[in-house]
Length: 302
Image (tube, rainbow, N blue to C red):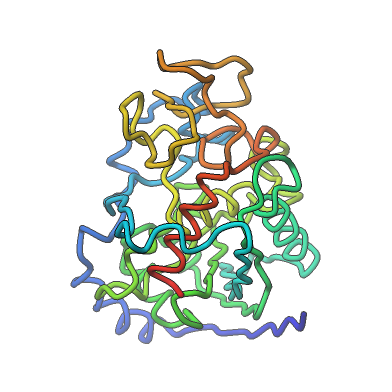
């Protein structure tokens, strides 16, 4: 795969002119800020903060939706889809640089997760690095979800169509990462579509086996493909809208064997990529999650 680095330093005037469009961002699509989070303790047991005190994700304002019944089940065991990844490395001139080797390791980790190589189901998805560009912009490096800086960054850099994944590696602002559900496609804010990750969450980063094995991108790409958290519905009957993930009342911190927070059958799915476990604990998507991702991709992104 050919990697083409491009230096795209933007002037402050250009950034501000683009950022003015953020005033029209809908709160239905935009994600909430860190001020809305109820997490209070650094490196807390609930898994809402990483080992450095950074929040895992912002609270999503987008609703989790099912595709119509008539459009479900169009994938199946023979489903295969290669997703082109357009990677945007954002630096502040000092921090944020990412090597080609690290990018390759990250794509490899993500592909193994989606192919079931660590355990669990083969989802049928594969990710292929299509292009890499580099932008030096301190404001974008620290862009938060729903901010004018996120709007400016994505309107300037986003490539491809709905079926292509745009990844922005930044400081992460207050988070390890965030993503938008497939239902953003076709909305006025479709330019926000994609995944933002803390560049330090990539393999070899400073968070060690807790959050620097590449699991953040696997998790966020799951949202981009339509998966909710395994703890989304707590112990309710709907849960995360996937039948074969056991219900879970609370997000997982670390890798606590035997965690069981709901009375119904099944231990908490602490090894599932859509929990908040350590990267070293992540090993699987379920067959039901694979089916849901296929349905969501074919309905919204294909």
